[in-house]
Length: 404
Image (cartoon, rainbow, N blue to C red; front, top):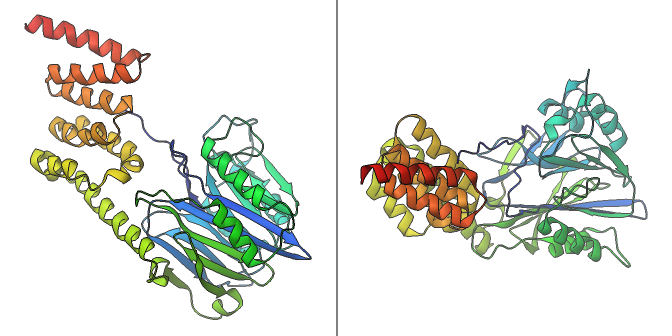
């Protein structure tokens, strides 16, 4: 079944909500006039970078984190001591409309980081826009006074609790939660109880408590940044190793030219992180071959990729893209290409009915009705309520009976 992903893209972030509950996390701590903020970036794409952009014409300079081969910011801090991060969420229907307001777009995140020093200024700017492009995501800003703003597609919420922890679950919509995100959030909030400290070390301990380790080599917490908003410093940790830190002082960094630094390059001694970096890029390179029609046509080459088992841990992240690619090949009449690559999902995502539904459709388009029937029957076994599978099975049985 063809399911086109609806992904919200802004310059500020790429936030992709995945059913397997990738849970990024964030916390803030304010005590004795000092605020520190921590963030874990949990994902599989290891090509992470930190950028430093100087302020021009009276604007603030700011540092931001991103992926080198993807569009968008994944969080950052400006030299006024304003930090932010983003979270992927389930898409939902807005609770009110924004008639008459211009639509929020990527430039407004840049404007905020260049011109705002606190969350009240951010809220004032955001209030002027239709925030519906944030559907499927959420932003959290924290200023050096310890105030925080949570920006959702239909809600701007300001808070000033001394401590706060957040993951990929809406604080204003109880239905916008996932089990993984709630569990991560609970760990952070528990770590913040008692005699908490507004220090980099204490915040780092909290982020360690909330970090993800996926064990299969595909990723987890790729990096952690702990911001000291008063000192304007960034303490960077790589691949859930909280013993080794690279520190950046924004007061000094912004005296230099604009800079881009690969995060893995800063931590050559982190063996597990370097392995994940190499493995992630290897898997991406192998999977990208499927977009080459000549490769996709070669049944033996694709079969070798499938049987090699080298991309298994990453298939949950590429499942939808491979499914969409299969349908693109079918639209072009390249049914063999579609069959070859959709077999990847059938092998590596065997509990997903759609893996077999899509492969069944490709076989049917290629007039291989017996194989189409087998795959639709598997899809129905996995999802007994599937009307599409039931309809296609009935149609295929009729065709096969006529042929027989």
